Image 1 (cartoon, rainbow, N blue to C red):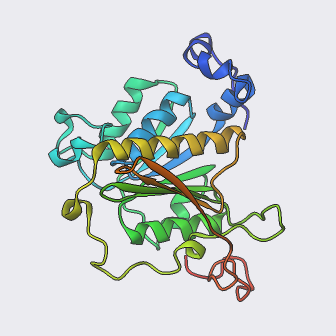
Image 2 (cartoon, one colour; image 1 turned 135 degrees about the vertical axis):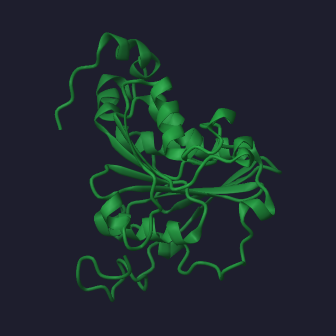
Amino acid sequence: MVTSPLSADEVERYARHIVLREVGGPGQQALKRARVLVVGAGGLGSPLLLYLAAAGVGALGILDDDTVALSNLQRQVLHATADVGRAKTASAAAAIARLNPHVAVTANAVRLTPANARDLVRGWDVVADGSDNFTTRYAVSDACCLEQRPLVTAALGAFDATITTLRPFETGPDGEPNPTYRCLFPEPPPPGAVPSCAEAGVLGALAGVAGSLMALEVIRAVVGFGTPLVGRLLMIDSRAMRFETLSYRWDPDNPLTGRAVTAPGGGPA
């Protein structure tokens, strides 16, 4: 894909990126070329979308079938009081346009499911999942594995959060395949085992921390600096203000890239 040179406005807008040795002009051009799909425009998706737009990601896709509720505004900083009742995709697109007119937004007010996931992630360079349910997390991670799309995925608890990056279509330095989401979490928990946000609550500022870290991980993937969270689960405990990292590996019995899978596209989609 050919990208036009940065305009004078863009050079000024991204000046603090361009002076960074790890980003520079080439890195900013890579961000301008990038196509990033964000699943969910809620607590995680709000800071994620804002920082990706501010960073100059050229094309952002937004998937969310929900509308803005007053109870969202404690953490979903992408939306405002006047947006209550509005589709989150429409509210998000308007906020991004106000922030950075150089970003092209594709808003899709649909729910990602196992049936449509592969079609929805296809055509994007990087996918970031900020959804709030296990059905979507497994569907998007399976689809990204099968479509060979890097995935940054995070989850929020009441006072804790986790983030990791998945590139299971590549191998690690040891020659072993990178792990899938199912290598980390083989099966979803039983229905009702994990209380919803409405039931358990969530610390609003924690969503900002985790969503911003997701944006950082996406930006690093696009520009190509640093060590991604592949095979590493970053765990945030906001009560103790503690960050820990858990390493995990490829499971040869996983249904997507395990030894029993003999054909491309095998396993659940």
